[in-house]
Amino acid sequence: MKTIISKYLISIVFLLTSYSLAFSQNERTEFVDTDEFVAKIISPDFSVYFKSDDQKKDFKKLREYLSKKEDLFKELNIHLENYYDYTKIIQSIDYNLNNIEGIIKNKKATDLVEINPALLSLDYYLSGYYDKSDITAFKKITVSEIANKKNDLETIKKEYSKQNQFRTNLKKNIKNVSADIRECRNQIDDSSAVENRNQEFRKTISIYFTILIGILLVIFFLIVYLKSDNTLSKELLSGYGLQFITLFVLIIAVILFGILGILESSELSAILSGISGYILGKGIQDKKTIDLTQLSNSGNQISNPTNLNNVS
Image: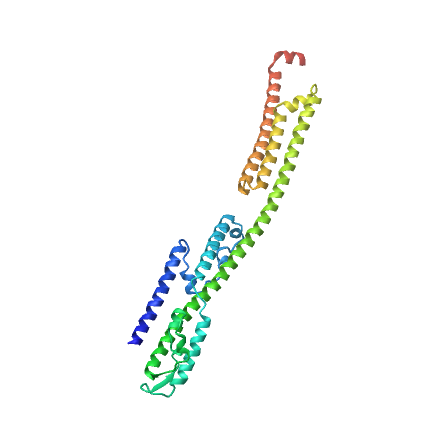
């Protein structure tokens, strides 16, 4: 009867322990499932999610991954608090089991054996307390009863060993998650350093191009001002002069947009090809216009009688 009660007591204690752990996990882990990290060891997976250089430079995904791992790290540490280290208790149970085994060895089930009840006490392993009078008070118990108690101790040891394994898995997984966090932070720092250098380069180039455009415009208007009565000034203010300035500034702006990464290579090629086609097409059109004008003037001279008389 006592054996049956003790077995029920063991079952109830461990059921309550499991329920407490499950309740604590559901209460604290709302978004993170830690069951998998308790049951087995999960290897670091940063290199799985970020294989290529483009993936490692994706700041959005890196930050999302880092945030997820940091939350997981916190939850695993909270969950670890629910698992007590039963190593010393397991060692104590092993000690008692070895003593019990030595006492009942080569004995029949009905034989009476004098034994210290403290070796068979389940109260200490279940609650941490035991009757101190059992330490010195030896009793005679049948080998069969001792064997049943021994089985109960082995059941407790098995359960505590299982809890210890869960705790070991959690500790190793916490280290692996910590390694992922460290690697992700290092990658963000490295990528940020490269991006900062690129930003500094773009800033410097932008300043130089701005100064170049400013110098060009200053020279243009300075020439117009100094040569206001000259033919050169009139040419610069004509359509050709303004076209030259506009195209020059436009080409610089397009190149600058390419350096800053605002325009892609395909877009740059299309724009520069369009500008080149416009310039060449404009030059050919102007040449044809000049040739037609000259030809028209020659025709007018030939068809004019006055000009023929003058030639005569």
